[in-house]
Image 1: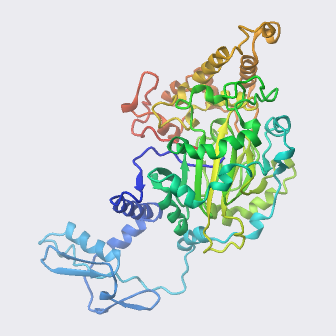
Image 2 (image 1 turned 180 degrees about the vertical axis):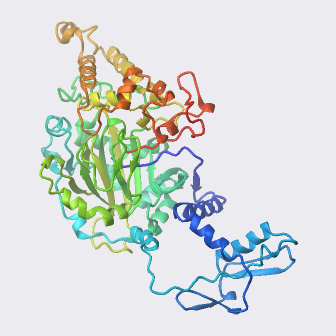
Length: 590
């Protein structure tokens, strides 16, 4: 139910065992800071403007805009270099001085000193009474206080896990596609008792986890010890968010700490739950029967990513997004509270501007920017005359589990550990959570339609060689469902009762047949619409990549997700329209 980014580029490693990684990390952070500042051209112009003849004034001091002075020798950044005229220059002051002398050295020669005069120390132009929201905004968005009004509203349906049966959950919430906060659902899970920072550090020693940010050009690999240190000191507007999809393989003990408890307290999220007739008591207990988590029929390695360990500092979280591939999700905070804001399918949140086909979304990069800029508009949306379009809000605490239906826009803000209610900037805190995405009987029709008509938006399988490719996923999913039904005797072929009912088909095969009919009729959920590009895809059949080759309804982002020429295989078409756009790029919205 939260968001991460798939960027299959070389990752920056930050581990306690690899001392060499520190230099790479510092270079990465330095370059990233320049890259996301959004003022590269301004800096370049400012730097080149200081390459001019020195003046006789201010020889002993540098003057700054606030009228203070600082001796040249008083700064820590120094460098000594020789210009083409054989003069030695010791630059003490700021990075602009260093750039100036290096720029002069690289572009000057002995006979062009008239056109390339010697540099002098950078002296900012003193201007009083000028204040910049642009420069202040980034600081504000990363250090904002949590206003009480942001946390006071609770409108998400809430129920105690002791009162919730599988039949009630499916009938009243999953079938109706309604968010639900289940109080106490994870209170007895071993993870709630065992998962402290010390436990996670010790259990995951010598293992690295993937952290990403919408503002970072590369993912980073942290061991848990160093990531907790990062959380304690993070002051970024869009901090690196640990969002690891392979934690169960790296550390199976973590899986054991919650999977048994999940089966006991939330049986409707176990494989034995069939989504129609309740728990299959005749199952073997091994998770083979049942209609929950249908994508499991593809196999663990071939299916799209579906479960994540999530760790982040206070005020981190996920910007507005819809979960991938039309899937449902559940999210369980283990350490720290999470603030959730939902917008119903078809009702776009303020400040969020998706393209008509949903392929691209323009919105604030950071959570702080959204809260500071669009909160008043959000409050007005609470008063919408159509109650079905009003946003829903809640705070999930450790011990709770939240159901996130497919197609709902949602934002998640990490609030820190329990008791941290004052919103003080110094109060960092940390958040640890688990989440899974799944397909069941209730959203199967929309999943089938999504896999057929939104190939460019399929995520979770683009950067893994063993995973089924997006253009093949719909076909392979259907094939695996039917094979699964035959193996379980659920296709009606060996069941006399089935042969006399449901037109000779078993429950699972019958569910697939009914879902196919619904999918062909249109979307069940208002999050997606049938546009011209979708109709063109259907005219090409299920091979949406063939349409993309023709340039039908494809944006730059869609083309970027297509394989490059060097990655083409028998089942992957080349994109001849824009070969310059790199392949293998995708977002994963979780």
